[in-house]
Length: 284
Image: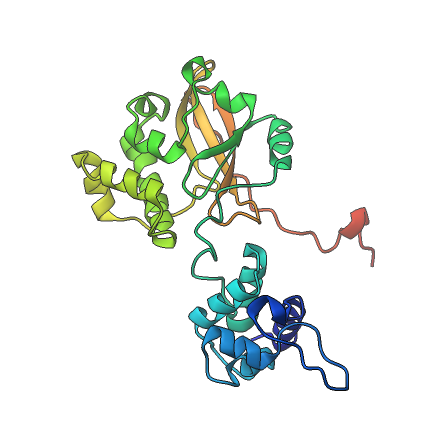
């Protein structure tokens, strides 16, 4: 538990909530009154034993249940980044899932300009794998630039994907299915993901692979065979990331290299050069 950071976050957000907005009245006696809800009022609103919230804010509640943290996050109207910080400060781990079911369904509009400025194939999907934005290079990947509305559904269930995703059953499906499983685990009530899963299980060849499971849940750094609508067969090197404000969303940048030959050895991992900070080489 990071007591100092936890206390600062909780105090700051508690102070922003007017007691009157929850039916409480402010004391009228003399003396300075701290802004926002009192710690006892938080316990009352959360239907917790008096003193529960005080223990947490003061850093004397080791390993608090995530149910308590979630209730506090909802009461304090935390955003997803603050929800993540709350869990990290209190438990030294990321939250078990998004704070709200609606999270991960939208991203700031500036992402469109950012994606348009990328030379390589680039696109962003939401937590349900619905396409949020993409650039021209992504559209050119598909015949007649007909982009799919949901990339997960397209990869698994659209027959045209088997033409684009070369060696579909061996080079793509074993890596795609674990991503779907992980997304459903994080969002078991997501209707879009649930619909894809139900439809997928009606197709024996995919259902069998789904039953076998798989451990890889992200494609970052993978190289796979791909048939480009304009450039023909080649290899796709995949870079993946996540917009910070939308848990479960994904940004993909795909470097496509035409030709039958697989690209050379994977580039080494990038690490900070502590001897060359700010562009200056350290001298002895």
